Image 1: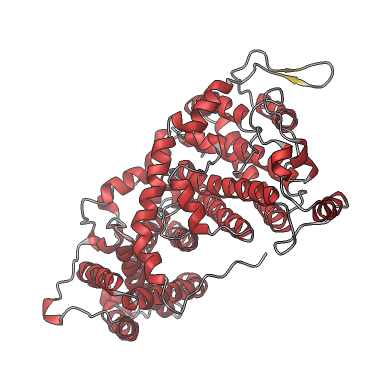
Image 2 (image 1 turned 135 degrees about the vertical axis):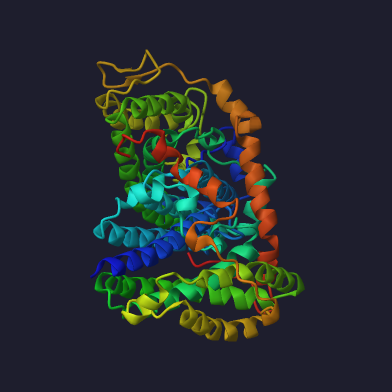
Length: 254
Length: 328
């Protein structure tokens, strides 16, 4: 791999790993507080998968010469994270958490499915394992989206409102990298544009079943910036909380 | 974790059996004496049902309330290994609540009614969770020593007479044994770590020792648990016996780590019995009746979660869904 490819791959790995770490963190915040016990358990399972997947990707970065996964995850500042802003937003009510889960996991599943055939074999290997786990995350999201989108007036209104709130942030997940053309040309990744098209095609049938409308495309206004370290005010407190104990004694083994 | 449900000591045997059919009662007691398990559809005395519901329900509540002090440390756990392990542990605890509510439901009280009694303060949960987990080390001490206490209690209760509860406990104890290892590994790491870590874990142990000594319930000297509940195998071991077992298993391990327990009178006497300063049972009563440092907060958090989740439960409650008592 030449120097440029290495930078391009690192950039791809960082944004994916940071997405997973941050959403895993948010999912874990539901532990003990879900609307029913079974959902505490589901969100915790997904959180564990996400955090484990993030760790696997940070390990690939470590193999490319970056620092240890714990150091990368627990000592950076918020502006060094490359996650999409969608994932750092607070959990809000269960409606918003579910909508975000639905929008993100569909995209993530497609991303990992595509990467299972990546020319960068270490990533392809991780992706083949991860996509199997994501199948269940997407199944969970679809079930709840359809159920709550159509159950009664209150649940429908809540889901639609949460959807409208999340939409432009969700489009922000597909912010292109400066290495985009190179990654596509080298067969590492199919690119954000293709991913977004597939994603729209995948989520639409479930939204129709749920009775949830996608905002008119004329109003689409993707929230970009996360991939280059621009974040909402929500990320900094999250990162500080996450690293509080780790930083308490940086010389220690925990 | 987390349960250490205990039986109201003031129940009077005569009142407990009032109005029961003597022949059915006799047959029931013979089955228990022979080591048989009582199943949901079997005949049972009213008081047996009532005490079991109360005990299993308290145990279930302890699991979900117990998830709160530890849960606050999931988002702060230091490093991937600890974060993943703590998430899995607390998830287990919530899963235990699910198992236990199902076991209690087989006796005729719905999960909704139980949770309602929890958030209105009508039913209790383990007293230890009315104390705060100030530091990461508090969460580690909870995972090791509170779970250790819970295992002692639950291994005893798993030999009880009610089938669904025993089966739930068997599974719970298997998972708890991993929590114990997790907690121990964390405490060892801190106790053998840097100066800051050692101070942190010693502080947590000092804070948690009184609640741990309270954990098994009032001394047998003041808790005259009824003979009948022992005969029915609802209560399986005395509070003091469990406390002795705990001290015998864990005090040496704590001392081995160079940690100090805040009781100058703690020692094993020549007869092999642990001597200790009598825990402050007035404090215990005060906390169990709502006067602890976190009672109000714990219930407020739970109430808030129930309130925020109401619309979701209502959306699930459609015409095609109907209540089904869980299988035992």
